[in-house]
Image 1 (tube, rainbow, N blue to C red):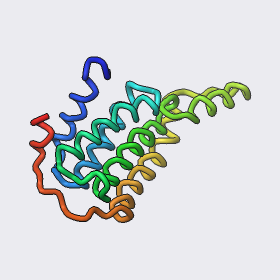
Image 2 (image 1 turned 135 degrees about the vertical axis):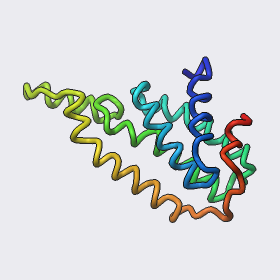
Image 3 (image 1 turned 45 degrees about the vertical axis):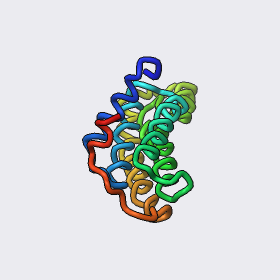
Length: 153
């Protein structure tokens, strides 16, 4: 996905669908992380895809590198590369551990069963992160951009 640029094109497309505000950008990273978690089981690879996109976004919006706004986007992009995958059996580091524990005790564990148990807590955690991060890392000023910023790149 990285070599062909598919992940980056997909991400910029998703970013273009959301408002050009901090809340819109953070929500877009949640969607991007969720979509990538379906196809890329490794949190590290998802992070390696999303962080350069987040950094390019910070630069294209002319957000100062050492500002709280840049920190908000960068930290949230990393969290959204990791957290949405927790709802999938092999989308996080602890999924295979849980699977092996169930297998050792001869209890069946299906992908759907795992997702049924983990989706709500994962969504709650993602929602909390998306709500609390802007409060903790309150940007110095509002963004003045439209969703077309992602279409230009």
